[in-house]
Image 1 (tube, rainbow, N blue to C red):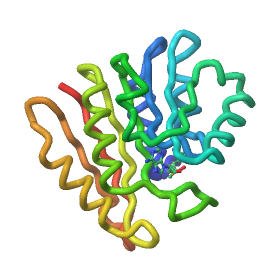
Image 2 (cartoon, rainbow, N blue to C red):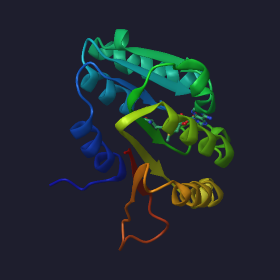
Image 3 (cartoon, rainbow, N blue to C red):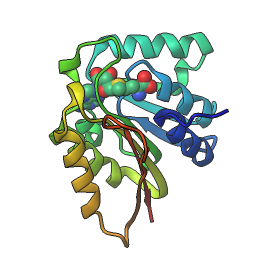
Length: 186
Ligand code: SAM
């Protein structure tokens, strides 16, 4: 039985969306789960850019890719996703954000409201028409509420003629459940 944990839920839509040969972005590489999925989906002729501010995260991501022989499809970028616009000049079909901190890593090196919103904004400008942005948003505990509130407020301001924004809820789950959100560029 599928439990549709937040990443499984988002992967469901990403899998449906990304086609062979496309260019995608993992804006928060972390332990490489999303990068790996994107690298599989884009196939040999596609490309994935994977950003993280931590060398440790990119090392782990590289190892995961090498295990599957997929490292040639991915450009690992040791930089903030807020600088995405300086690194990517092509239109992309999917951008994945999984906010928060590296599991097992330093909680202080987590994503932050200002750079996250800047990265979403730049990411939307890179997204092709019909492209998908997937966001896993966390709050409570070490994450606090500032980033979640800021991102949700920002999503609310997006022009409905230009973007379809769907924010989902784990409606009966206690303790600040994660929030999956999807943006489609119209
Ligand atoms: N997608 C990952 C996976 O599949 O394992 C999980 C990502 S983890 C929850 C969040 C990651 O975002 C951490 O590795 C952290 O270093 C990274 N991060 C924090 N601030 C960032 C920024 N400004 N730009 C890019 N990555 C950032």
